[in-house]
Image 1 (cartoon, rainbow over the protein chains, first blue to last red):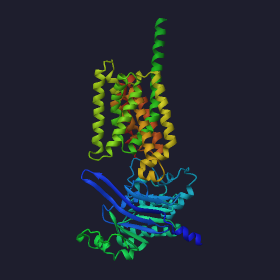
Image 2 (image 1 turned 135 degrees about the vertical axis):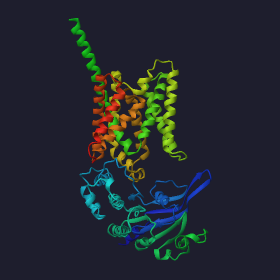
Image 3 (image 1 turned 90 degrees about the vertical axis):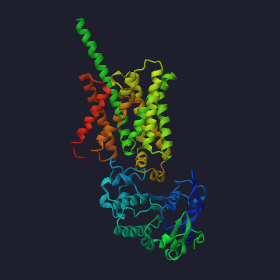
Image 4 (image 1 turned 45 degrees about the vertical axis):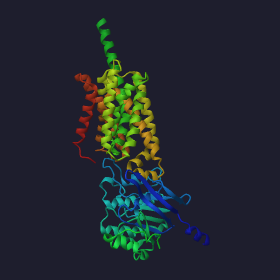
Length: 249
Length: 272
């Protein structure tokens, strides 16, 4: 029991003072500035922030898709990550069913992973779509299918980039409940990007408010009263950027 | 007696000629079918176009350096593919502009080089192809390349499909995206090289794209689409070949028109 406690307290990924910047004709463009955070097992962490705040970039850094300019990233050994991209545009000329899409997630033959595919589809409530061609799925259905796909490898960490995109308001609440349920059932950590603040507050353990740098972070109830958050979201039009609220809570 | 003998000779000659052309057509379909599907799925139809056009420069290179034409074509195609991959990631100009620039500068440069090379190069056959003039040696190239392309598809099929869906998703699933993409370019370059003599630099993209477009109306899985595209390509080449001989028309153009007919015919059926 004690051993498990120690194991549980070790972060899955630690980002240590990371910078991402590109040289452009107008000088260096900084996308991420001195960002540090730890993703803990079995916790839901949500990244919020205005457009262009570097949320997706931060996710991609975590996934090793984008190289760091500075800083370091430590991953737990053998960390299994399930990734759901922001939006997958399926070329309608590509004939593929939901089942086939899921089967591409592992090198196994499709006949060997039937039960696994069924389990994951049932878990996200998309079992009835198993034999449906991808091109006829609605936005919400596609998101569920991509979520099932991310679950296929039994990941320690689920990375979801704006999972609510293209999902109507009713569906969004359902999807959030589903994500929380998946965490409870599987005990995996979840890192997600979101725009919708009200829904975020309900399910997240930790909210990171990003605007190139980390403005503030902590439990949703703490973040909502933080001046950095207030500046960004409550009175966005009066926002005058200063660095007084750096460093988080 | 002498008359009979002559008839027999003509018959025999004609038959081996047609036979060779059909064999070539079958070998070509094996690669162009599946490759065409990936070009469509990955929205790379014009990419195929550009590489096909650049093959003319490859022929010129082959003649100037006194080496096998196919080697020159593969080299130039790979060079163009590398340039296009590099340029399209710098979004100052959009991808279609770069495709146009590469495509037509390679075509023009190749045309200039060939006309100045002093060889008695038959430009028309390079531009529009003639499957009836293929030699046995060409058949070796065709079947050798088909085997390589087939092997690659068999070995990397899942990875190729994952990359087609989303490159970043593929990366997180452990696919070495760069390697698979580069190998795909190599297979495309080889296919352009072997298809050149049959359908020519200008008409070749049609043989890549049309059968795959026809197949997309009927297929329920990626594998099915590749198979149907292969069959359609072979049917298109065969019908085109027979028609070219019957009506005494240029074979490359007739093959493309026959592929077009199959595509238009497929529109009569309801798409799946």
